[in-house]
Length: 232
Image (cartoon, rainbow, N blue to C red; front, top):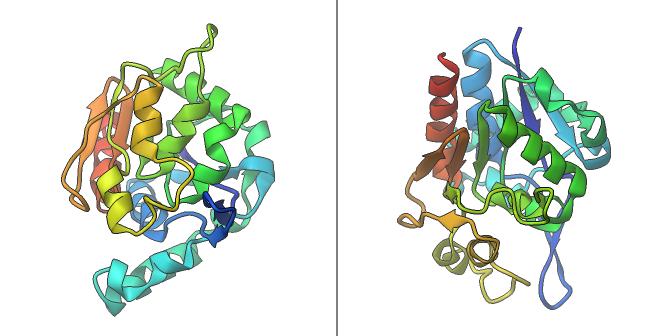
């Protein structure tokens, strides 16, 4: 069975500008919706995190109000419960991206804490990009792109068009004035071309083998685009 790699944050908090540790992790929908799409298409999902830490779900992402009601929240929670790979992640340091049909990074504020500066993840991203196989990243997941540099020290994704969680969305979420830095700004500073869509509306951008989504609502469309690229 072909495999798709989920590279997920190992962080359970996000350090804000005032030093406060805001509880977070990965965003439930951004793991659950692609998982359902990929496994439904016959792929095995393998999870990897820095150090092999069991990833923490952002409790806020399980709330009915962000899942279209209680039924949606229950469905997402049930999907996460069925994801045995979440409870047995590989160490990111031991992963060979060449073994996977595609690589996927879910979001949540967690990647802002760890993957944004994780050199191992950065090297994996560069290898995945150069492989030509689908590399998919959603919401705050593009924070991980900041750690991906080429042999000359420049960002490997400079010049690529991407979708990522926007300044407007961070403002509406109540964190723009609390964060140490904003994802849209930092990606732009690295030379990445952020394609800003309407807040909270699905926005998927494809540039070569890089497939990115702006927000949680972009997770399912992003997964569909990955499967389209894979021919499934």
